[in-house]
Length: 536
Image 1 (tube, rainbow, N blue to C red):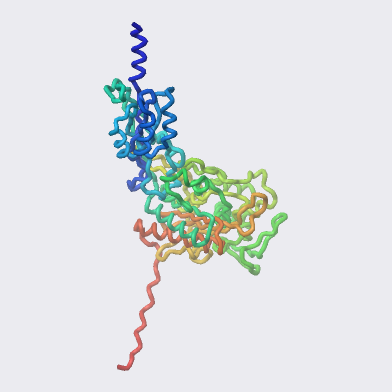
Image 2 (cartoon, rainbow, N blue to C red; image 1 turned 90 degrees about the horizontal axis):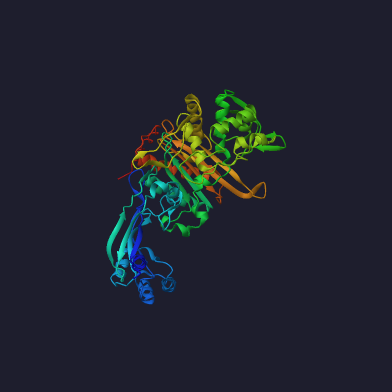
């Protein structure tokens, strides 16, 4: 009697479909070092309708897995569902201890737990994958569809005690693809260490750095301080989680003068040797702009204007360019728009539309005020000059599933013009404001930057500055572009004092690590003086 209906009830009670999660793809650095991996874990679950003693199960789960017994007991009391999680991604050994108790209604399946073996290294780049192994931030979320794979399933028949009797249907899971990043974990770790030391030395609010290979656009390091352990991502807090090199903007100050001077040279308004008789200050519409250090009116070549970071000189060149041409050069270098890096949440920066420029705009934007950029945007601009005038879209992902990612190139300036600007930037370090960035045996090209921080209420915040340095080395055949930005340093504010030494430490390590040959002669040591003769 009632055969079909009773059979349906029995099937419902004893047949269960369990989802088998797919393994998430591994993330490697460029040298094959594992940055994000899947660790073996066991997920324990229960079927409340088959649990005979909810109190015993709750206590046993607490003892073996440390779960909240009251929460679990309440869930097991409800017979509305066939499935309740007891513990997600538990330690397999502890889960096996619970299984030995052979409690009716309990089951388990193997699952993967995301782990970051390098801990703090590249945490801001990697981001985080949650309990369900789906990406929530960083590269983990931007490449989630590639890394996540496709889950499988098993339909099983169990006896009244929850023991599996038969597997009636099985769909295999498909593992996610692995990804190789351009990051070099050794360069990344060193860059992070230098930033931590810099923040500590200058009691700064934070710092960010980017190390690029200008020939390929590959990011070798992208670091922030303070950092955090990627295995404890949720505990870090939103402010510390931000990858400031990509998401945050700042007024660049004098590092932006590269754009104005390159524009004036590129439009053939001047040459590096063209001279101007420059006063200490200049009137621009309703404002007066002066140089950083008081001086008499004197002659400056364009080369001197860059080396000595003369605001008056750069504004003089900007007035020669005019609003339209200057705005065009800013656009050509990629400011006011995203770089296109394969990372989520990139900011395009803040750039006043040309139609909204006032009479005084030509007196602040050319010297890096009234414009906001990301550290990555500024590093990419200098990488364009280092790469002979060719801009390569920066990238963090080197290959996916063994297939190299696409390289995108754009000619921004001519090779002769880029070569000319490289020589001027080298002069900044050898004779100008960037002497603290010099590395014995190597030609270094770069520029210092010191900028006041805007006040959200208007104007600039008193006593708050951003110090930066961006450059490349060896200047004759650039291998590394390095940018360092330090937010709100105390005791000193200038990029030449705060950021240039950090650039020097990061660059020197990278040169030694990659065994890059020196490109500048080193002065021979002075001959030893013979010791004076003494009486016996």
